[in-house]
Length: 356
View 1: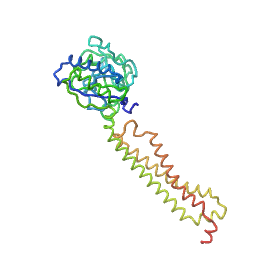
View 2: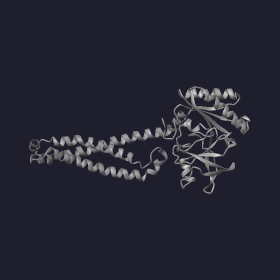
View 3: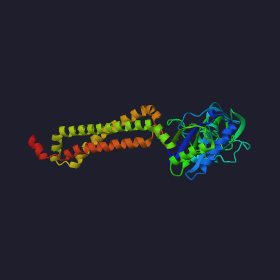
View 4: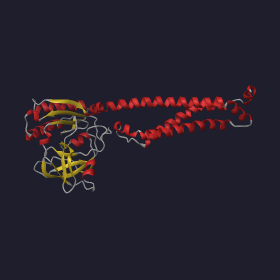
């Protein structure tokens, strides 16, 4: 199941390590990573395994100065993620164009990178990202873009179109050897896959400590807990406001029918039809509801900036959301005005005249 974050988090386990603190240089660390992944892939409970310097919804990745050959220079930096070949398969990040990394991308071959859609648009605005070349601060030799992958949120749920550049671990080992994470997609859920990663690490380097063993799906749930609580709270108050609005419409319609009872009776006595009376009551309720809805829409548009930071997967001015809200309000108004309208249609002209 794909999430709004652009990944498939189900059945994915993550295990974080600090290779640099163990006294390993870049080559030793790369060799250790490859052996751990080889052990993990050999187990039937894992379908894919990978290593990355950064994983979705985690502390912000390092942004390094980045220059497109013959094009844009970004001195402030672009977030960099250094990954192994199976990273995109583990997280289910879709390939948009070109290819992802393979085992053929080695230290002695042409240097390559993969960018996400936001980076392709920002760094190659002419639309020719695939095949383009770029340099990064720790490697003056240019790298060629061989693939474009789908957009993925990496830091906060409110991030919008963050550019990301991926380098293969086999070619850019050094900067990835601080803190990183092993990832594995399980064939029987995340728990067996996590146990496999732990066992593989113990077999390869039993003295290397690991931390933050987790399910990626659970990590995302924890991150989204605050947003879900806020959405639930807003939903509760929205329902409460809808009930109050419905009661108000009912009260106004009932009061109108009671105050016009004599007029309605006279009209009925002179040949007026019950359907016309119902239309009159419902029409006034509809007019009041439309006026209130117009004020609500204008207020929502004016305050939309306050909600932008709490939304993801939907725009603040999403037309479907506005249509659903207006439809719900209209339905509540019809139900609230229906009973007073029915009472108005049931007025007995003879009884009204006798009362006079």
